[in-house]
Length: 169
Ligand SMILES: Cc1cc2nc3c(=O)[nH]c(=O)nc-3n(C[C@H](O)[C@H](O)[C@H](O)COP(=O)(O)O)c2cc1C
Image 1 (cartoon, rainbow, N blue to C red):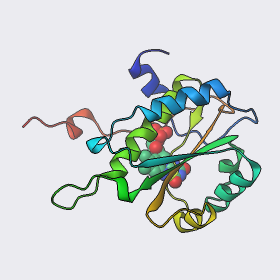
Image 2 (image 1 turned 30 degrees about the horizontal axis):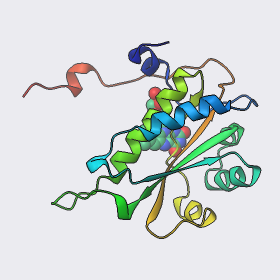
Image 3 (image 1 turned 135 degrees about the horizontal axis):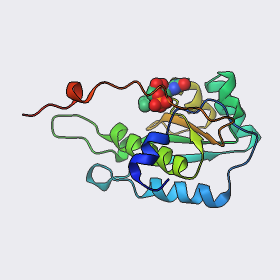
């Protein structure tokens, strides 16, 4: 799997993980792919917590209580540093876009390494902010569980047709 399109086709929201740790080398590779992500005005307004201690995992699991979520051996909690994000002249903040780009780098890098991931935004962000003792201007945005998929699954891959999403102007 070395063409970008292959990697994109293989990525899916993995909701079942093996009880097997993620190798340090693979984690370092993923981290580097995230670090190199672009951001508006190169502000890099993000912080990524690597969560794999029992205590850290329990905190995350209390913020998102789906049973499958607790199977993951490792999580990355991505947060937005509001004081560092670029805000356009008309007032539109761009930090969420920046974090999303880095997080999708994570997901594709993990897929390429044979690992499963799932975007999780439907968590209790207020509780997460408290449990990880984040400063006021930091906002938890997404939690990504990472691990070896427990069985070969694939995305439902229902996407809008090309004609609907691309238009010529
Ligand atoms: C911003 C965002 C937030 C999401 N939040 C959740 C979530 O909280 N829980 C969950 O199980 N899946 C979540 N997902 C996964 C989507 O449901 C999934 O990406 C979509 O159904 C397409 O399926 P696929 O990822 O397998 O291609 C999220 C995805 C995105 C991009």
